Length: 455
Image 1 (cartoon, rainbow, N blue to C red):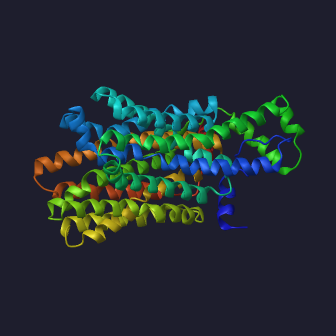
Image 2: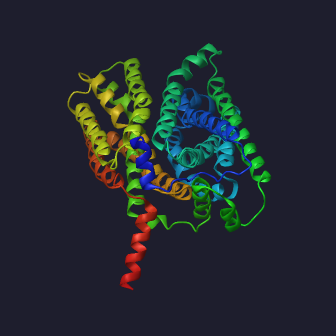
Image 3: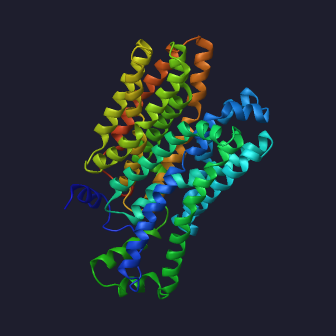
């Protein structure tokens, strides 16, 4: 048995997928899994182009809408704010409609928002359409680990790596291709932004079929209470599925009482802070050091492109380890090295620092992998993912703004880079705590038992 499968089963019940109807043929289930895998990749490709395509054309958008510099600055902080606000709603929507239906609606919201905002005609309408797209991104962000845990319980690390790689690919491709595509299609920024709506619309299609398949299967199953269904199932696999179904319907976990959940949330927030600072300010650091503007843009693309291969490798390595803390320490150390290089010799070692910081930014797929491994049930993953990402993105909002304030008032990059490096220290610490081999369900149960004994 592969070590990855063994690790997953030691931390979680054998099954966290939705129970299969006894009348459902194996071929249908295999087809559904393939469809979910395709939908997962297409969804991940659409989780960042709404942000990075706008960054590439921000100057043109400002001129076209008469947007002030202050509003444009606030616009860069809107994504994490929307991720935090709308992410809180995700668990309730998931319980009501199911994860596949919510992801399908999320992709539709992204497609609609991206199609509408280039032609909004005013700054408020542009912001509203952007918020619609970001709402779809927020709920889909939360549910990626849930989808993996539910449909691929014995391949959590592999599938997490697959969609993390797709997410990184979509991020870097949108940043690099938006301007050339805009020029090729006539030079209008509206066209350059609007074309990404087509990619999002494509991602809706597999999820429509998945939702239809699940509803067809559910309607074909005999109506019976959960206890009668469990008694009717035969074989160890179906008994495990019945138990998983009952756990999914259990009361919500008091996730905010879990130390592991808080460690994950803070780790998520600190890595997101570093990522947004890098995307927003690293080119300016290089330009101020004498690097040509075109080269500075390429350096940022290199940093972002590092996530494409590593986003697939890191989750697979993490899934084979009982403790992911050492990986968090290595990635954080890379960040310290990169920021030290930017402080001491930003121009002389520019390519090295870009590569090293690209490795450090791969804390994101590691965080997603740990979310899937720190909960034992699909409901637990949904709750933990929503808490960690919503809280984390909320914590990340001040970072890029604070860097800008320090840069403006100090007149250089010494203090901002020192702050970036300083944030790596707590990131390493909470990454080690979050990587410990435990689940939030077991942790909360142990705390409850301890409290009962003392009472």
